[in-house]
Image 1: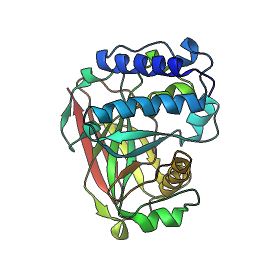
Image 2 (image 1 turned 135 degrees about the horizontal axis):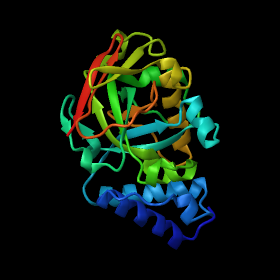
Image 3 (image 1 turned 30 degrees about the vertical axis):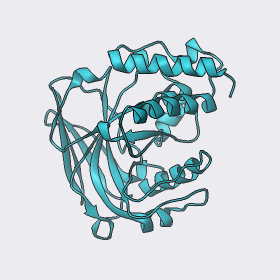
Length: 262
């Protein structure tokens, strides 16, 4: 870490206020130019700890930056992660208040639900599949508390990997699911197809992203636990949505999931 504890606390406060007031801020990488990845994860953890103290619970994690294009855009060669909290979860098909977010985007993903723990640092794709109880079509609502999404790696890491919400469709036991790398997702906004992708877009296989997460969390003294959810990364781009947007994602072999922004 290169920042002082006071500077990290300042960064955490700025992000909290930006989220609370739905008023994005300038990039933390500009406001605090010494911010490094270790500092950014410490900032993320401070804000998660405050939300837990206010009554929220961790229901899982999300992996971001699994697409090569996004890694190239931010100049990184590996993903990042954030936390999923119970107050971020919305029912399938439910209306979601668009004004709750600064500038939201939507991502279709295959959500994992674990039956057994995954303790890094040597978790494999096979270990992930053995530990997975079920998978579901899902939509991740991503949002940046940084103005105009002008983010670098440290900006998004500090900002809980830009995670803001989760909508899950029906669960399919893993033994009844198709090859997840071959699953196709079609993303529709207002009944218009805007993107199509496959599970291969997520580090070659969505379970590879879950394995990366379990191994990375080991360095933080954390593991993935039974019942937790994992979003491994988007299968397509992440288009913007706004009030009035009706979003649906159709996954081959897994069904569909939808959300309406009001």
